[in-house]
Image (tube, rainbow, N blue to C red; front, side, top):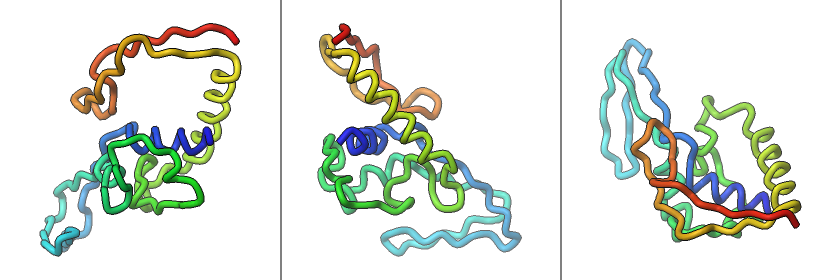
Length: 145
């Protein structure tokens, strides 16, 4: 269950807002959108790729703004649906290691300590650099078990 919660937390708070890719094909690149609009991107221009938007697509994730770890139980999403670790050929090669390390560390913390949020949890803020961060401090208290 911890793995599912980690995946859901990563889906909701992608560590980066996206990536930039430079079009290097001399003839440019034709981009087709989900609503069948088409755009030509000339050589030398950049395309911005979002990690947050696919992770909040209601067509893939029912109630996309809610925390529901069970949505990952027995289901796998391709790297164009769950994009926290990148997309396609730019997918992070260390993603499995990162997920295992998060599970190990978080599991040990939860086993050894009790945590409590003091006050309220500030909303997510996407205005600082490329990180999805909280709009203010997250005050926690903890004690050893």
